[in-house]
Image 1 (tube, rainbow, N blue to C red):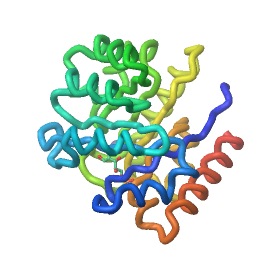
Image 2 (tube, rainbow, N blue to C red):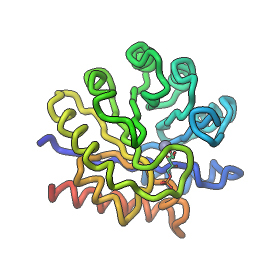
Image 3 (cartoon, protein in one colour):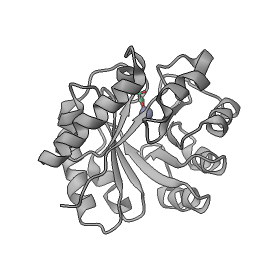
Image 4 (tube, helix red, strand yellow):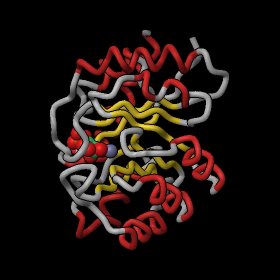
Length: 226
Ligand code: DX5
Ligand code: ZN
């Protein structure tokens, strides 16, 4: 078993959009990356930022950005998010027509490339990409909204991805996104996740930074035990 390094990537989806700089500043020094949910109201029934607004968030963010693209035209938009300086760009396999080309382009612009799967998408749909990506994101809710319940029935898939990643030499991150909280993070860690998006758990907390630290501690503890 390779040693696992825990990463916490707060999602600002449920933060106060009118005061984002301050919302990000609250958690920046305790977090690994800031998770930026980009939705186009086509791939998912919700809209978050236009490209100009997202670019400004990325430019001003004091820590690396983890862009999660829930957009239909991802083969084009994915490259743009790499170009403007996202540290990591994650696309949905369900939306990409040319995933291998997209991964190459994202990396060419110096970003990490991640591939995401929705709850009904099997691991088999991305198994051939494991050798190319830097991160796999297993959604633990239907993408589109924050504040939904964690889908524990996705844990078998997380475990399947973990087994596949363990056979690869490179360090590929395994992220879960949706319903991650103090109640669920250990379940996801035990299944094999090492990178955790937390939106409402962090931004509904009285002290968001303290919540990030608590989530990290719990995940680290269950990593040691597994
Ligand atoms: C949902 C987004 C998530 C969302 C998670 O489609 O991809 O990143 O912000 O929010 P919580 O942690 O509240 O489930
Ligand atoms: Zn997300």
